[in-house]
Length: 119
Image (tube, one colour):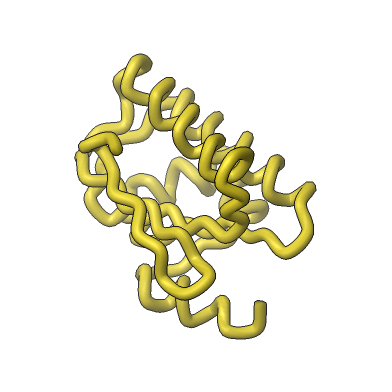
């Protein structure tokens, strides 16, 4: 498992908690993208919560990974992608790109998990 993030299973959800302040390194992001896709494709984990609480900087490549995951999970039944812990700076980026209208955002990991009660 990569040190840049931690994957924890909580009920039906798989929480991916990023542990670094910057998701900008292309090599690191390539590895993260590959591993997140494996969670969905190979391990059939369909409910993902991406926790950005510790992240301050995102590259366009990181946003691309989130969009690709959103598309992949949107095509699968009983699946969900949520982002939580998004700080004000990252939220502004999501609003500029209008991704705040497409992605499900929750203030905290706890709220994201609690919102899954109906699934």
